[in-house]
Image (cartoon, rainbow, N blue to C red; front, side):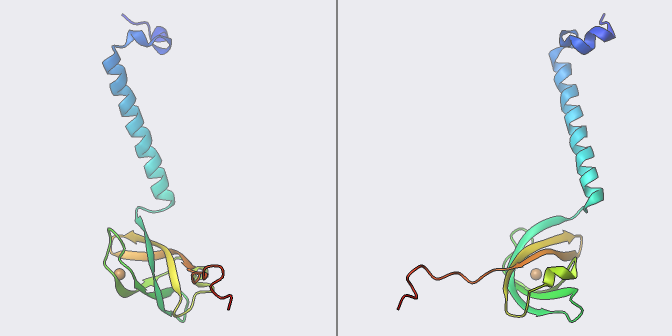
Length: 130
Ligand SMILES: [Cu+2]
């Protein structure tokens, strides 16, 4: 018989197999709890990187129409409008800009949660020397 006080300090009181099962269950539970905590704070959606060109920015600055490239694992290239999580995301963004960002997909809703203008590629050094 194992004395409970001995169990806590002497693992040999548990058969090794039982120990590992308990360890795995505890680990799975810890992951679940961590995941649930993260979800309640953020959201249950999935994030995808997105790239495209700005077709228009809504007058209320709460949405943007993007001609976006393929979003791997989510959708093919198309032109569509997205709500933006915060109007500040559209600061400095205007029609014709090439942008990249992050889209949060929750069920049927996809919201732009990050957006930045891609600076035009700088010409190689010496290219404009003449
Ligand atoms: Cu789309």
